[in-house]
Image: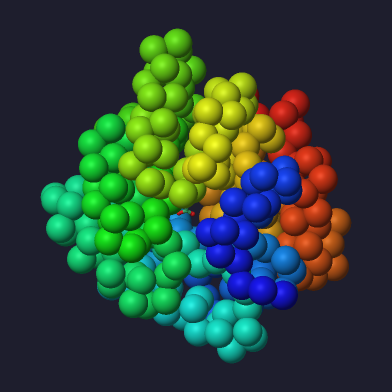
Length: 270
Ligand code: KIV
Ligand code: NA
């Protein structure tokens, strides 16, 4: 297998093959996900909750992200993995200035990331452009943006009103124009996510709780394995239930996404 690259992802998009992404935070799970055929691995700041036991992602530091990114990168290297490695810029490491964002991004790229992800729309477009112009591939993230949970007032569906939907579409287009090659859409109505996807040929939408009309899907690894400290979100499916192994669960996820069976808009979307 050849390494997953931006041209390869664009090619998948053109041929209508769904892109699969899972989070991983350590070398072993990353290597297993890669072997299971997952194209993109996200070192998400969800590791704050999953690995560190924090109440939200707000307390995750750049050092911690770099530590886990390096672990995942080593795991992939060790098995000659081909996955595209995305790492989250954590809270407070990219909002101050474009220069701060570039410094933080470089830390994660030097830890082994191929792309960095940052949350929010509007004000983030110039930051995305600044990074992309300097050779840092960027994934944006709209809808429910967990780093701003306190400003949003909780973990709830976003873009439900006509006004909010219009803003989301506008921000998504701005992010594509700024050069974002990927866009996570979290907890937005399925119809809106499908609309945004159709409007962004050059920016691949990756949905989570956003229905099956996106270019790809992502889940938090522990959620899809059914190992979760809190309440399981409605948009998750436990792929471990019918699988004999972690590898099997990941393969079932890849198959279900590729065949358009997950997510099921009648079960996992709004
Ligand atoms: O941190 C994370 O795991 C994420 C995904 C849920 C998209 O940002
Ligand atoms: Na995240």
